[in-house]
Length: 254
Ligand code: NDP
Ligand code: 8X3
Image 1: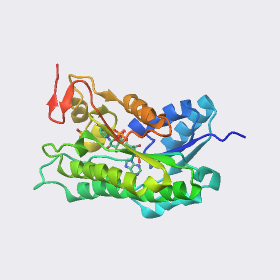
Image 2: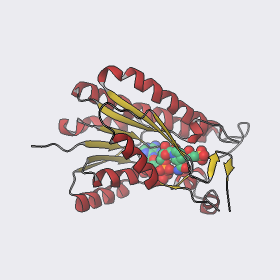
Image 3: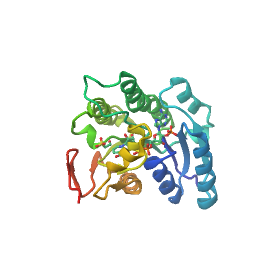
């Protein structure tokens, strides 16, 4: 019997992760979808099963918690044959100068974007190594991992760390034929800014005023491009921007 491929997507309850879940389901991947909001995971799981006829496992899991990430180990051996891991769960909190930044915000960003990504990667890369079937790890970085902008300090630092870990993983996992790809988006209109500004939707909307930002689907398609290359090709790194954005600080607003 032909087995479907399996993708594990962290942060599939919104934005880029949710768009990836839809696109990979369309491509007939079975999915492990994770996030903290159970209701959203349940309804997405139902939708993907109904529309695409794939199998979905939904796991409520806060990537900041080592204990919760260990829930992955309760999956059956069949689900541990993950072909693609999309390390997408991440966020920004606040936009303040370093001298007046909120240290709780810093903890959340560091714990989610760096430590959470590491905890999940440790579990899933161990499966990939022991399955001896290769695999592909996609790390969602950011333009903020390539440049630093005013008041972006800690968020930028976490994404620079992802950029570094992306390179490190590629070296460490080379003997196991595991591909590692960094995807670095510029501005994508998702719940990102609402989360950054803690529910201030007016302020969040202004981030995308006067130009067409990227849509989550654009990034899902970029990820799919990397994943669908032949076995001998790895896309190391992709920096994807809205046409109206030349850098973190240069936007053409009309
Ligand atoms: P969204 O806010 O729309 O989605 C973020 C996702 O991450 C949600 O599914 C959320 O799920 C999940 N998440 C956040 N914290 C945790 C946690 N502690 N444990 C588990 N899941 C968590 O934002 P985006 O889709 O835009 O963000 C996805 C990734 O893309 C992030 O890594 C972000 O840094 C990156 N990025 C975004 C850009 C943008 O402009 N939007 C640009 C460049 C990179 P839940 O709340 O249910 O836990
Ligand atoms: C999100 C993009 O420019 O707000 O990573 O940091 S930016």
